[in-house]
Image (tube, rainbow, N blue to C red; front, side):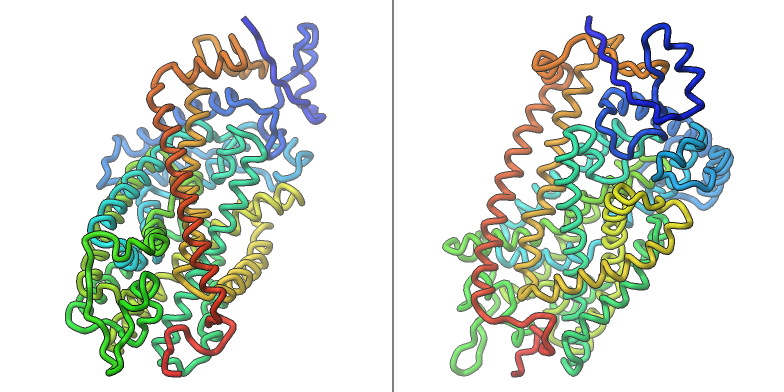
Length: 598
């Protein structure tokens, strides 16, 4: 039997001196407490993360049952009673105990004065979000419902329904994989704060850097997309009398203020409102589309134009082709356009990128699965019905976002105003997570800035948010085509976080977990890691032990997702090459892309 000890230096903590002297005669170095470790310490083993994660889950379950008295179903999780919330909040206050002293926990020297109880209490204190809040946060996605009609117009009835169904189910599977990863790696001692932390604890620093870079790109691009879509909506609402650059700039500045919300729990009521606003916009556009023609004047930016310009080009008499539908692909010869359309549908399931952040702020992460499946079902049913309905009435003339394509000005303005409010809330959510990723991985880790849980970090947040939104505006302003932008972001980022990365991470997690035998694992008394074997033999045994079929599935899923991402990137790049070859309008000009009067 091999006994592997993974010990770290104690960093000069005087309170470990007694323990060191007691164990010195046995040749054992005292175990370094979690609060004395570096924020991303490569010497911490999987077995230690897993040990504390199991301890934390047991404590959470005991506390959850004692505060609520019973487990909750999906309905009560999403719509909890007020009395139940008050009981749980009162119990939570008693459970937290002593508070964290006023120290900068980013500085190892300052952390030396923090006790074990204070360290775990500090971790508990930031976990305030409920499953109901998470349900609304997941469904707060402006680009999902209003991009799906465009996707159907470029793929046709059959392929559109089939692919959206498959993507929806697999997004739920990915959510389940991420949930298992979080429950197995997160703890009060070593909290998981973002997607990159999961990668680090399984594959190391290189994976964490890759994940954080891609996540930062996706988040800031999502904010940029919403700034541009809101700018287009505002320019249409004011009948193009206001400079388009100003229309976009207005939303960038609005983000300076709404972006000051720091905790996800405070986003709960805003996310709730955004969901119902989205539904209202969907009902309005469906009703108007059923009783009025499409916005023919904007045919140049429609789905049909991307597939084949002849589908939406007026004849010599100014008469546009009739609305058309196809059972299969509208133009098999232009396969890239259909793939680009599919990338718009992928946006509806892009929330997996921030699932880890949601779970990291939940009081009871075990309930995340109920909220996630509820949200995925809601997204699938509502988005699918909306997409099919709009495609049925507007065909190849559909716009992206779809509410820009209804012709009566009065209803067009109502839809635009409501959609702009909902989109701003979604952008604020993306910006919130984006700033946290950058702050935690740059300011805290490299410059030892105080964590966001401390009051001193409030002023840093106030200063960073305007810079973040300004950069998002510049990025969005440089992109000549909204649908082309969403396609490249979907292929490069969203597909990876929702479909490629979850099985990639879960494969190694499952192998390491299944390889643990009785008598193996982390010893909290000494910090030793006891393993009976190592290397290829252990990996092979872990792969074949227990649910080996899940490991096989993860490999197939990973390779399939990677191939789909490659196809999406190819189609998006080909599309952008064509777009950049032709002078196009952007947010740095005064003319709106929707204004064809000139």
